[in-house]
Amino acid sequence: MFLDMTIKRNPKLIETAIKFHREGLINPNSYVLDIDEIKSNAQKLSQAAKKHNITLYMMTKQIGRNAEIAKIIAESGIAKAVAVDPWEAIELGRAGIKLGHVGHLVQIPFGMIREVLSYKPEVITVFSVEKAREISEEALRLEMRQDILLKVVGPNDLVCEGQVGGFKEEELIEKAKEIKKLQGVTITGVTAFPCFLYDSEKGKIKETENVYTVIRSVKKLKEELGIEIKQINTPSANAVASFPLLAKLGATHGEPGHALTGTTPIHENEIVEEKPAMVYVSEISHCFEDKAYVYGGGYYRRSRVKKAMVGRDFENMRQNILEAEEISPEAIDYYGILKLGERAVHIGDTVIYAFRTQIFVTRSEVVLVKGIQSNHPEIIGVYDSLGKKLR
Image 1: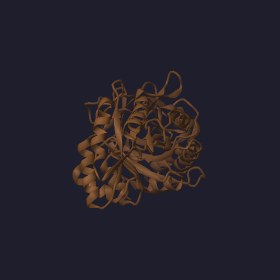
Image 2: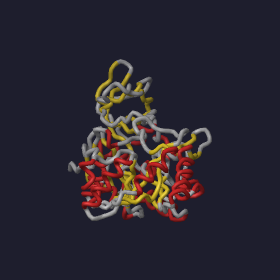
Image 3: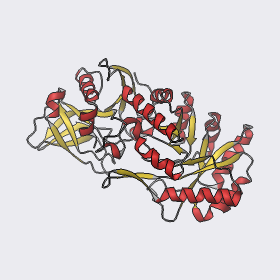
Image 4: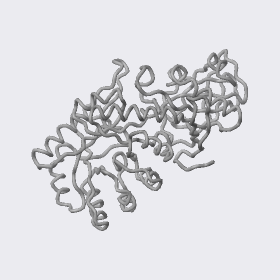
């Protein structure tokens, strides 16, 4: 998906990944992350957001909940993290990363609320009165009061499979009245997902109906219940290119994730501020009939992978790009598949992909490399897909 753009905008990353694999310093099934460019992307995002009075939370799931990268991003201007689920919140919290937003895509189980609250997240999103009550009760035990966001769902909203939940718009005021009675939580904002998506035909990021549900809900909570709204959080496709639209629609908060590695859908075909900062490295395991089989473990099913470079040095690999074959969702990705055609492929060749991923749901290793852009690349750590350091 991003291979052409990565060759064009960050060839040093590819060259470094090939070099380290050929030297045996990294294994196949590894994501190589360019710390220099991630830092630069974070700075660009932070500066652009400030111009539009938008506060950002960094999303780290797509890079494997990696606390080391989170620290670098925090130092680059995005101080707090959004955790996609409570396990990520605890992983980051234990590492000393400040938490901005927890509970949006995955609610916090009752037995994990106390620890999550101990890290003092700025806001927690709730889908129900019952979850708000659980948080309130635990907050009172800790002698604190927790700010919460309400996830709202309108009748015409786009709701992703596996992410269903929230307050129906027509029931919002009734439910909010119940939550207002709780002594351990304060309603401070509204959120939904996805609020923005990339329109490939028009080549720009556009709002979804979900945003308008958020705007209507904010208005209702203010006017009917007198609630002070401090946060209007509109995640998905948050990048420098989308910040003017967020500001125009009244959003106060965004949550860039793939923008940090230059891998949102807009980065496939458009030259935008953020540069590609991640590639997937593997190796030819074997060939069978008219296909080459590549060590797997990191082929995310929504990656839209199209092709890969194969060979043993960058210049030759630029001329040896093979078409990828999608793996069935029913299959385990023991191997990736490349169509041979007339291309030359040998057992042990390096394979470089650049596609959209969510590292935290893979079995991959994550290799952090600094100094790529200054021509002095150095591996600073190898981690598993959930942020644990391996070596």
